[in-house]
Image (cartoon, rainbow, N blue to C red; front, side, top):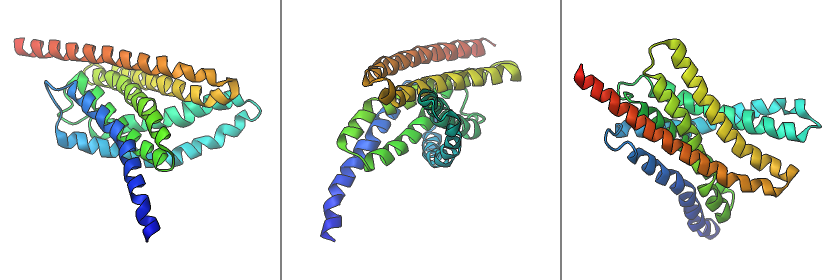
Length: 245
């Protein structure tokens, strides 16, 4: 009993270190939409659905991993497959599905910016649970490293996808809607996959590849910030036109 009790402080610290980065980023990105905030109840719902998607990702990624044998003898191709298909495609598609099923048709999804907000919320729910699973079995260094790499990466990749999802909601044709959604998904897969590939290929090509994580994460953040400004501008123009009608 004493041995179990002695582990509790470490477990609590690990849990807080794992969850805090996602919650901090969640607050930051929600505040970007502070002029017309989304309902807190829907935000919480999408966050927990993002958490639930983590558990669905596990069997899907295991299923996708069964095809890695096709690249036996070609370790670099296997790293590409794991990075862009097993991880990025499965995870970003699940986040997109959460938002499309539970927020996209909701009456509160009435701005381009809402696409950014809800996909980031879903992604941070996903990233929060994923981080807890990693950190609870790891070290403080694992928690700190993921806090400045994996967590922001999840948010920015999905946020970029959300911008195109938000635009898709207001285009005049189903064809344009589908094209924008596919474009957003492709961008999210590319950013997420590039991050994974740098990690997976480093043992093969040298740890110098890890230096590429910094410009990738910063570049994705700056790209998302630009999309957020564009979304807010588009929403402002739309509201002005509605007042004129």
